[in-house]
Length: 128
Image (cartoon, helix red, strand yellow):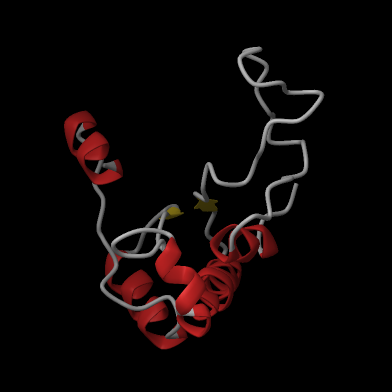
């Protein structure tokens, strides 16, 4: 999706081919692409659905926690801005954000949904 948006706007981009768990492949991708920014929307979401993460916790941790920290660290080393996309599965309705109220969460509010292993791993690397 992000690639199509860049393409439509004439913005040059490249997809990485490395694995988030493999720091050297991340460094190689960045060296080859020479980006001005890095966008990370990768991670384990589960196939066919998020329940996969409940039964594959090691793989989910490696991708969503270790992998996210790897790409952040490699970008830090290279002085590259990193835009990290997470998940909508971070928030649950509460008394300040009742269902149907139209009151949304802001990025300054702490995430409050911890109902799945997937959400827990995504929350481990989100800084609010």
